Length: 252
Ligand code: NAD
Image (cartoon, rainbow, N blue to C red; front, side, top):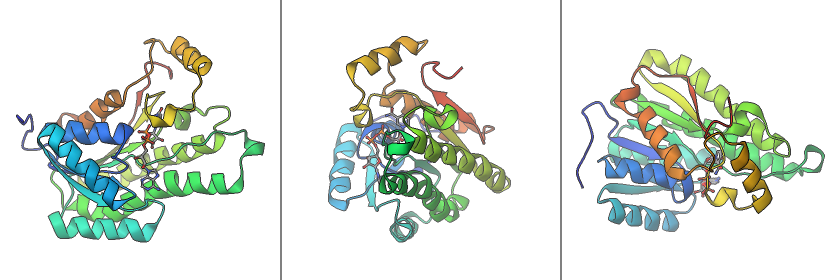
């Protein structure tokens, strides 16, 4: 497969939660353009299988790494393994996440805990554990996957929105802290994207969302992957601390 890579583009990139959905689309896009992609999932066997599939489909180099992002020890172990394999990371995509909807008064404590532990704390653990690897990287940068819900809130999704807003704070503060070390940190805020996560959206809600979207459709995982790849690339070398909506114009 031909490589469209340039010398300053990231060569070794970790994408968390990349056995499915947006993460998988990001991993595939990066692999097609010649990066070494470290695909990540919770379960080793499943991730190894997904990495082999992506390598076969793209002709690229896709490795597996695993660990539950809500478990700081598992995330540290993953970072140690990447250090042993490569000694550095040039790119990081913090994508692993879960969704749960529910009115504030009806949302159970364990759901609140799970959402924060995976989305907010998981993103924080991942960035913390890999920052040393990024410091050793070439033109290093990170992209954190937030959500339209984190930018403007969504009724019935208050807790999910809070966890995704936390990711925006993390990205902006990290951009300020790590900029002097040459590490860029940005966020993408997808709107309604057709992945397994959107399966609970019923036909009426789907039609209402499309009607409210200036570009008149739901997004695809590849819509988000394209922007993520751009933010990681040297074309975005003077962009840091930004939140890029990938939402068809829903947030204006
Ligand atoms: P998805 O369910 O296909 O992807 C989520 C991935 O995260 C899965 O591969 C899953 O295995 C992984 N994951 C979940 N919990 C994990 C954990 N504890 N440890 C390790 N991995 C874990 O859905 P998606 O739509 O591709 O979601 C990707 C990201 O995009 C999420 O952060 C989500 O919040 C965000 N997002 C999605 C949408 C949408 O409409 N689909 C909109 C805005 C933001």
